[in-house]
Amino acid sequence: MKKDAWETLFHSVIEYIRLNHEREIDEAYDYFWEEEDPEEFIGGTALAIGFHNFEDWMASDFTSRQTGKAFIDSYIESQKPSDENKVALNKTKDSFISLYEVKTIGNSVTLHNIATDEDISIDDERLKALSVGDMFGARVLDLGHGPFLTKAIYPFGNKYKEHVMKHLDAMYNRYAKHCKDKACMEDFLRQETYTINTVWVTCLYKAK
Image (tube, rainbow, N blue to C red; front, side, top):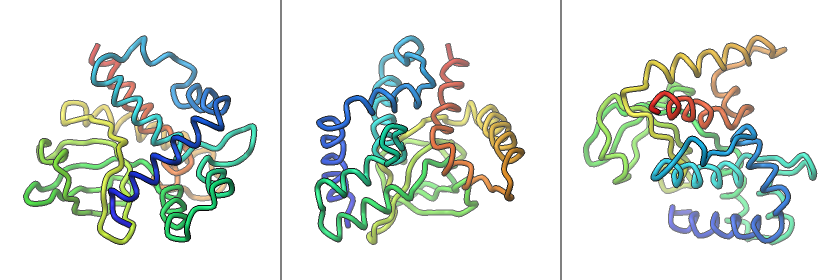
């Protein structure tokens, strides 16, 4: 599935959630923002980014305490999508938001995934405005036509790199300390799905 087809499909998931799960949206919102009001500390472009990031996370990662289900699972059960769409949605649900560093910029941009220690190449005009060494959080999908970014984006740039890594490592170490089995950074980001947003918010506080 190509990116534009996935975007149309994902939009239908968002619309389904809005129409059928209003109460769970409130639950997800409180969880994602840790029961704070983002409008009290975010404004302008950052607030718009935060809204897109919340919707991406809500549809892809959130599991409702009321139903015990992810929204994508509820959508699949209710809407009976085609096999191709079902595969794409399950891959979306299996993805996670990670931290990336820009390694090279050319016709495409080479990114290093901090969690998996892997490099990927993505052709996305948004990335070409960045500089080598910049960091950002994002969700990357590959549905058979090459990797692409979803709408979720957490811009850190280069200025807050040291703060981001220090804060992320501290959160990971607390998580790993309480795990029965040995945990890696990828496990942490898959389980604690709001982590990159939490780190991003700490940068916004520092910038005030």
